[in-house]
Image (cartoon, rainbow, N blue to C red; front, top):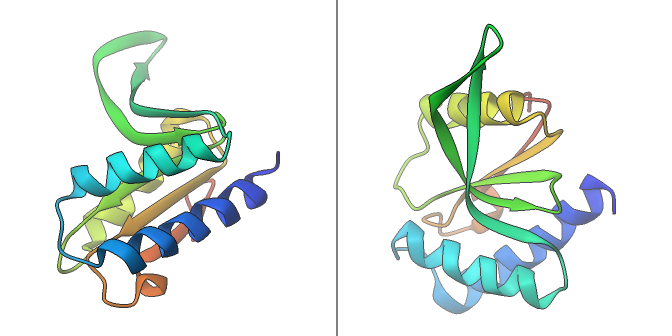
Length: 126
């Protein structure tokens, strides 16, 4: 399945979850619910996936954890914050780059209009 098809399914589930739960819950709740909903679709999904940082051929102990990785193609960073800051965008762009995946999605469930809370990154750019 292509990244665009996966992201389309993710968006649909995000709309469903946001409509039912609304904004204002903790990020961990949205992560758990989205994880369950993605599994129901039959997609392969992993939570809190460790992604190492490789420096000069050496795998460092300090990497990062991706909130969700879908089909080993799309990395999802979830937020539930009043305002998405520049740092959130930069973090996801770096995650996409370091993971070697093509597509990343930054999803802020705190938005009243969830459409405004979804940002896609292809190879680390908008």
